[in-house]
Image (cartoon, rainbow, N blue to C red; front, top):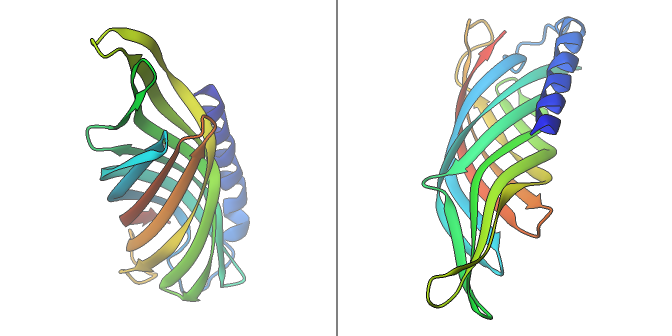
Length: 202
C-alpha cells in the first residue's frame, strides 16, 4: 500500500508541474485539467481456472493535458470493487479451495487521440494492488490453510470518452465506456467493462 500511495503522490506532483506548460494550448476542447469520475459495470475475477461475473463499481481521479490540439495524456489513480466481493471455490485434494477478491487500487498513465474536440479514444496502463484471501477447508469444514494479503500486478485497458459540455463550461461533464484487464502476481486476473460519468476541474 505504501508503494501505491508514493506512486500516486509522484504522479500528482508530475501533473502539477506539467499543468502550466500544457495550459498554454488553447485548442477548443474541454479534455484538460483535473477530472473526477464514477465507474460502474461488469466484473470478472478469474482464479484456479474458473471465474465469476458480478456487478462492480469504483472511481477514478486524474489529470489530462493536451499536446498539439490532438494528443491527451496524463496520470490517474483508480479504485474498484465487485458488489459484495467475488469468490471462486473449487474442489481440491483434501477439501475445497476458495479464492476471494476485495478492493483493487491502481495508478497509471492514460494517453489518447482527439478524433473531434469532444470525442476521445484512449489507452491506459499502470500498477495495481488487489486485496485477496485464499483458504482451504476440509470436507468436514475444518480450516486447513488461510492467507489474507495484498497481491500486486499490472493493468492495461482502453476506451472512449465524449464531452457533453462545451469547452467554456465551468465544470464540463463527460461520459464514456472502457475495458480494463488486470493481471496479478499470484496468477489471478480481473476483467471489467465499465460505463463512466465524470466532471472536469479546469
